[in-house]
Amino acid sequence: MIIVPEAAIADLMTREQAFDAVEKVFASMSRRSAYNFPVIREAIGHADALYGFKSGFDRDSLALGLKSGGYWPGNADKGLTNHQSTVFLFDADTGKCRAVVGGNLLTALRTAAASAVSIRHLAPKGAKVLGMIGAGHQSAFQMRAAAEQRGFEKVIGWNYHPEMLARLADTAAELGLPFEEASLERIGAEADVIISITSSTAPILMDAHVTGGTHIACMGTDTKGKQEVDAALVARATVFADEVAQSISIGECQHAIAQGLIAEGDIEELGAVINGDAKGRSSDDEVTLFDGTGVGLQDLAVASAVVDVALAKGVAVEVDF
Ligand code: NAD
Image (cartoon, rainbow, N blue to C red):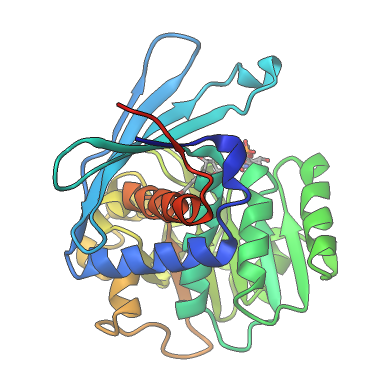
């Protein structure tokens, strides 16, 4: 069995590799070659923790396994990250455990890769202004991955906790882009691409804020009860998702569905666009929206890629198991 510890991941996975792995697995999901198993997520009644599994199988790559982990709110006081996750890969021919891979950095990379894939396939080609809503841990990963997809000239951003905006300013500076704090009205009017990555439980970006064509990647809503975008804006947009089943149950679309504003059939898979089986954006004036709920197959795809690189570089730790 191969072990790839968390500390080794940064040297083994690039943004480009994460992008390729995620784009491929979205395409496999849409061809029905890969499927996610139902998500388990439980409050365990200890340490205020939320713990769960995301799992699946890709018949094309033979990636089989699960990501196990969750959220421990008291971890910061112990010098640990609140979100903790580990990926377990199994041999699809024998069921033997093939690898255990640290999942924390991989989660950030695969989540940023998902919105970047949506930007590549759905954003206006001439996009110049990137709007960021959210300035937490994931936001920096999101901005770096998005910046590789279009020739952005400026980043504008808003956050519920304005004192956190320094993270967006620092990340934009690292990318050589100017950054300005902006109102939601300005983001909705000016940004050609908007990424929302918050833990909000009420809509932040309202229908009236968005006045022109844009692509919105909704990345924060991954649980029942969370919400970042007005349901009326979801209803007005052309909607794509990583997986429709998750989008309507734990993703941004849960609210528009519950209010009867859209139907399940109104949501297209991003993988269908990647495969050329569905149309993406029709015009620069259109509002496209990607509901990136985060699927287990993304985790398996990036973890498998990491194991391949670790083996190729001769740095994989192998143990008898
Ligand atoms: P974080 O705790 O570092 O940051 C939280 C962000 O949400 C900050 O910008 C904060 O200001 C904002 N926020 C907190 N309470 C808010 C409120 N009431 N209204 C509006 N904004 C509020 O978290 P993170 O690691 O950056 O993750 C952000 C979100 O992304 C979380 O909801 C997380 O569960 C989600 N996430 C999604 C995926 C996916 O695949 N879709 C993957 C990882 C994380």
